Image (cartoon, rainbow, N blue to C red; front, side):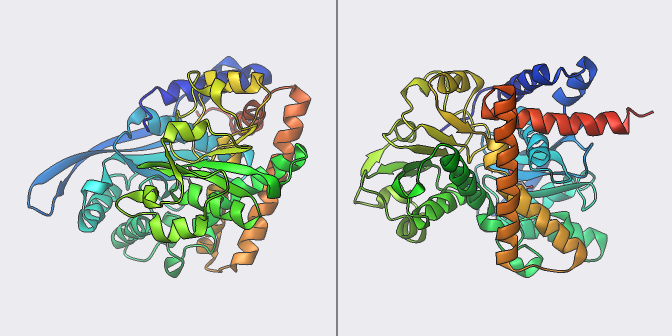
Length: 417
Ligand code: GLU
């Protein structure tokens, strides 16, 4: 799997389409096509063997018109400024589509964490946090987990920020462990939101989740939770994959067993025997009703879009379908529930976590899940009706809503000075 193509160009192409529909002022379009602020840091880490390595990291704030900026921190060997800027832009639209009071941001470090010890990852995280500390803060820009980071990494970020503040600041980052001011339900939130989006799409298309065959690309936090919840809802997960490749069984895979026994193992889920081995790209083309790409961007392109069999594609990952693939998929009558709607569950519960931290008042999981489901359903409904009103595809409908909210906020605030 690789994301070595121009994702910022892709994000700008999507914005340009929505801008046409909105008849967006040219100057405002220019403002929204660029991140407001970007920081590149090169920082040293003393490795376990005493040698010094230098890592490149980024924090990009795309737009803060609707509130503090929000977005994950990614540790991956392909992270760069271009990708981080695109992901920050998508965060802006995502927060606006589901109407939570944030702008978009993203951060990352170009690193292969598989080659690092836990201690090295901790040192890298603390130094990176310190180097971007002028950007982040509980009222300005709030990081969260993304690919390659998790609750432990968020704890180190929180601790590092708290050490320099001189007191504990839980609201500076979300996706923390529950013991440190994290929210119940945050770990599962993105996958849960993906499945709510899938259920809504199924209703609109008169399909029954109980009879559906679902393939999931990516078995990280988002993919594995979505697969588990599909299984719990009575659907059949026929294929899953991780970085080592995929497995396929048309009769269905035992997802709970896969996530407890095989996920995270050296050989990955491919060690599970009772299934046919497929590659990550073959998985996308399998015979199924629903495809959930939940790995990385740029997986469905003009090259393979014509071979996708699933009628419904629910984007768990950010940017899995390129604009050229969108055209092919839409023309062949497939419904793509776009990333900025489908995977918004994570940032929605991040918002709940931040609200709970600022109030020091914590909710039960049931309350979190109910509120998450309510926001996902309402957002789905408004994207669906915008799609019909504008006779466009679902991605563009979501962008029309998101871009309009950000544009309106920018116009109302005016341009300083
Ligand atoms: N990294 C996640 C995303 O892409 C979550 C961001 C957050 O919770 O702030 O949506």
